Image (cartoon, rainbow, N blue to C red):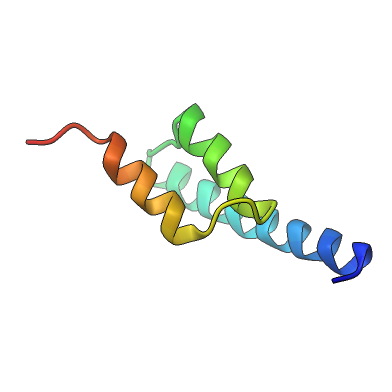
Length: 63
């Protein structure tokens, strides 16, 4: 991939994440700092969404 393409892809992912955070905020929900940091890794392509989801689920206390 070219640098321009990678930068555009990161920007697109960040926009999608920002939109998701805004949608949650409209419902009175927030994203924890840990989850936000992991989402940034998803935006940069360092982590897949499935890996992100697995980390979030692993961090949740079991019932």
